[in-house]
Image (tube, rainbow, N blue to C red; front, side, top):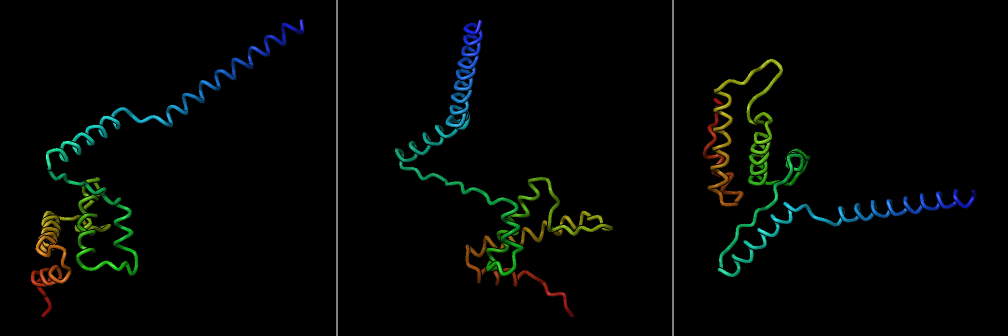
Length: 158
């Protein structure tokens, strides 16, 4: 009788070991495998790169976007060291990214007892357009950007 019990126990443990090894092998495969859609995307990108090299074409390199939180950290940390052109570029990028993600336009005035009007929305868009135009005119030169911005700002002090 003891032999039968030993045989049952030993077959159960070897069955568990085989199952555990099988599960471990599957988990290892999952960790070392790539999603097929990602693989196909990478394969297509490599083909485009190869075609561009063969045909002597230039390719456009897409830079990864900074996260919204990274943009906020850069803009709002004390003594960030950003010059005018860097600050406004990041501010406009943050605005665009917030609007894309469904958040309110940070250029529009908001408050507990204030509802923005159509005029507020139009003015916020005009400010963004002027800033973008100054950035485009400056071609990366901070002095030109500052001069363009000062030229377009109307001082309303009496």
